[in-house]
Amino acid sequence: MPKQELEALRVKITDLDSQLLQLLADRQKLTNQVAETKVKNHIPVRDQKREEQLLVRLIKQGKNVGLDPHYVTQLFHVVIEDSVLNQQAMLAQWANPGSALPLNRVAFLGDKGSYSYLATQKYFARRPGELLEMGCSSFAEIIKKVETNEADYAVLPIENTSSGSINEVFDQLQHTRLNIIGELTHPIKHALLVADGLEVDIKSIKTLYAHPQVFAQCSHFLAELGNVEVKPCDSTSAAMITVNELNSPHVAAIGSEAGGNLYGLCAIKSNLANQKENHSRFIVVASKPVKVPLQVPAKTTLIMSTVQQPGALVEALLILKENRINMTKLESRPITGNPWEEMFYLDVEGNIEDGPMQTAMEALRGMTRYFKVLGCYPVEEVSPTKVAAVNALME
Image (tube, rainbow, N blue to C red; front, side, top):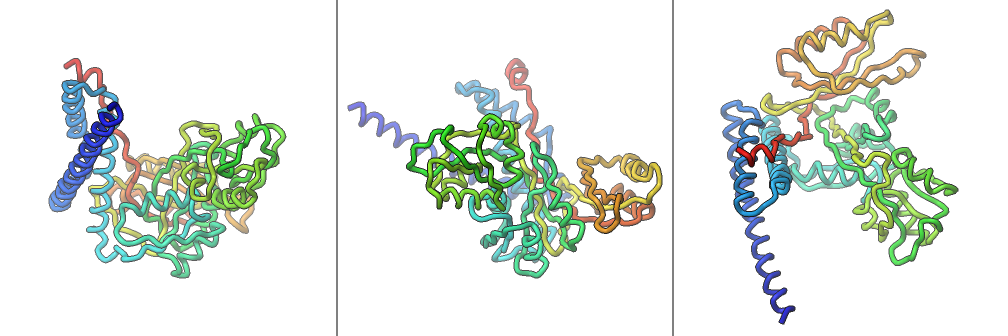
């Protein structure tokens, strides 16, 4: 009898889940109509005041039906983020007619299961057209695929919250004619992966396989392991393939649990990174630049070299301050063949079609030895709407 009651309850839950999915789909259709209105009337994608009012109302309604305020807030942060990203994607398509492809050929580092593979899946899930994945063994090969028109896009990791910038990618950008057309931030959750079906004790592991960046991000865990041999691989997927083939209780890989499942590996320990909030930022590059509508928050990546005199870089940065442009990243890399000279990479918040950005770029071109826009692209990271749930309930 209890089993029958349980099954009856599960049937009801399944029915409610189906209704929830349909309601979310209906909501998404309405937000697409909102995007159309914003295009016609040049209205920004985000309205923080409207989002805050929405969350306050939903928190109060949730309380009336017995739902925790934090649960309601978390749930609708996801819903709002999805709505914003979908609207931005639609606006981008309308601003770039003819850019949608029936087949998106995308080059990335590694094979299925690598972090670049997961980031590629995430980014192109919101884009029209089928996805053709093209795994590569090096950043140079990835860039070449797009430069020779073997691929339409490339997805490249450029920095990590734990291990910092990926210098090799910056060096590739210095010499390519490709344009940055997008970005995304992807959570990196490192797990210790072993062959499924084996009883493995962490103390019995003698060899670890991973990408060098992964070893850097998990250095504290490696120190705890003690006398274990670490073997660098070209990608996390290559590390997982190796462990799968060896099928030994004495070897393990470090990578994502989702990626490991693709290769018959299971996680015996999770959250290995030094920083528990571990994220990697990826850029998407293509042969042609994209036009970003002014309603969409944009970021621009610049590259420049300054004249060799004291204060030259400071003077260049003051141009950004004078035009009220916020710089989110400054990276320097050596100029090949010019000892002790640096090329500077800058990420700034702003659209190259906006007045202040155009003024700043014109000034920078006039005072630098080399200046180039690597790309202007939509900001994909949607900051959560901040609402004091407790205060909202006390009103």
